Length: 158
Image (cartoon, rainbow, N blue to C red; front, side):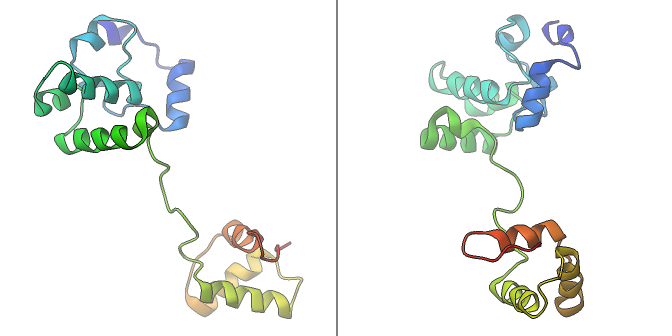
């Protein structure tokens, strides 16, 4: 079987993993092209999504069957279809995970931090994190505080 030939520690898999583009369900890909041809890699999330979309659009395969053959659900198919329409192949790349901004550091919290820093410029990010915990019962990593205060137009913490 084609997938059995793949080595567990190979540079391509490592790169896909680092970029968040490793198909978590590569073992569920049952499409014949991926099982019979070395060119098709069931671990390559972008390639798998593209081929799934192509099966429906070009080969007129039903959505449910195509999604299942590529290890996806129907909703995932429609998300991939919309992403491809919106952004081309780049839309098939996984989006960055996690918060998009410093969600714990509201304007009030940042004002408090700046005020504390103005009163004592020797405070470290760890000191400020401790004060946030005391004042707002808010746990924030010192590096997050440092980054928030270092953004353009804001004073940098030492």
